Length: 119
Image (cartoon, rainbow, N blue to C red):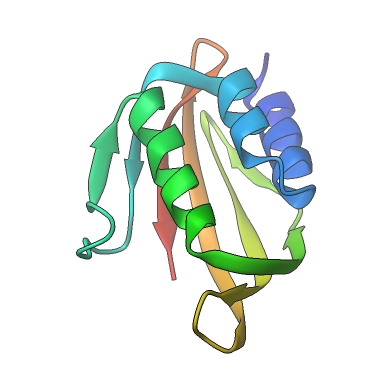
C-alpha cells in the first residue's frame, strides 16, 4: 500500500472510532507510539502493537461516553501523514469535553511504524 492509501484507511477507521481495527490492519508489529508527555497513567513512549492495544484499552476504560469522533483529511508527504483527530467524550467522573490532537504517522513497507500525538 502507498502512504496515501494507508493514510486514507487509518483516518477512515479512526473517524468511525475503530482505532484497534486500524492498528490491527495497518500497524507493524514493532510500531512505536509517542505521547506529548508521560503521565502516571500513560508512558511517554511505548513500542510494540501489544503495548499500543493495552494503551488503547486503558484509555477506553477511563471513558464514560463517546459522543462523536471526527478526523480531518490526511496530509501526506513522502512516507509520513498527519490528520487532526477530534473526540467529544465524557471521561469517568469528569465533565464532557472536546479533545483535539494532531496525529502524525510514519510508514515503511506498507505499514505504520510510528505514531506521535500533539495537543
